[in-house]
Amino acid sequence: MQFRYNNNYTKNRFFAALDIMGFKKIVENKNAEDIWMIFHSIVEQIKEYLDKEKTGISVHAKVFSDSIFLVSDDDSEDGFSSILIASAHFQNLLFEQGYATNGAISFGEVTFDDKNDILFGKPVNDAHLLQESLFFYGIVLHETAVIQQKTILKEKTPSYCKEFPDLIIESRIPLKTEGISIYKNFSIINCCEKLIAFSTFEDQKEAYKQLLYQYYQNNRATSNRVLQYIQNTESVYKEWFDFTKEHSACDGWGKLISINDDIN
Image (cartoon, rainbow, N blue to C red; front, side, top):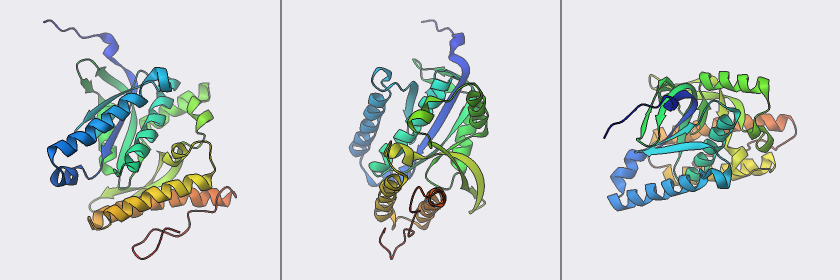
C-alpha cells in the first residue's frame, strides 16, 4: 500500500496537551481491567462532547497513556474558541471524576494526520514543556497562543467571549524550578466559568471549591507534593475570586482549605 503526504496535514493550528496527574499511582493501585474502564469512559465522553453536529465544538482529540491531546482544524477564531471550551470542559469532567489535570495550549505549524495518528510540530513540544513546568492543577496559554489570541481579537470578538466572558483570566502561576516553586504571570483557562455557565461568581466559586475540597480529602494522605499542588491551585483561584470581591461581584475565596478546617 502506498502512502502519500497531504499538504493539508500541515497548517497553523492550536494544540492543547492535558496531563492526567497521578497516573503512575493509578497504574500501581488498579488492575488492567479497572484502568481500561477508566480510559474507555474518558474516551467515550470525549467522543460525545467533540461531536460537532451536537455541540458545535470543532476539535480533534487523541488519548495516549496519561495525556489528552486536542488539535484545532486551523488558526481560526472558531478553532481557538473550540479548543478553549473543550479544554475547560475536560478539566472539569475529569476533576468531577476524581482526576486532577494540568496542561498548556500553544499555537503554530502542526502536522496532523488524524487517520494515521501522526501528530508533531513545535507547538506540540512547546505545550509539553510548559505543561511539565506547571506546579498547580490548571491549563495555561503558551505565549504563542496569546499572540494569536491578540491577532484574533483585532478582527472580531471570539465566540467563547459571548458564552464564557471570563474563560481566560490573568494570574500568577506557580512553576517548578529546582525543587521550589516560583511565580510568573500567565493567561489561564478559568475552568470555573465553564463549571457552571451563566451563573454568579459566588456559585462558580462554591462549586469549584467543593471539587477541590473533595480531591483534597481523597488525596491528602498521598504525599506532600500532592498537597503542595492542591495548595498552589487554591492560591491561583483565591487570587481570582478575591479580585472579583474587590468589584463587589463575589464574597471572595474565604477560608483556605487545610487539614484541620472545614471548607466553609
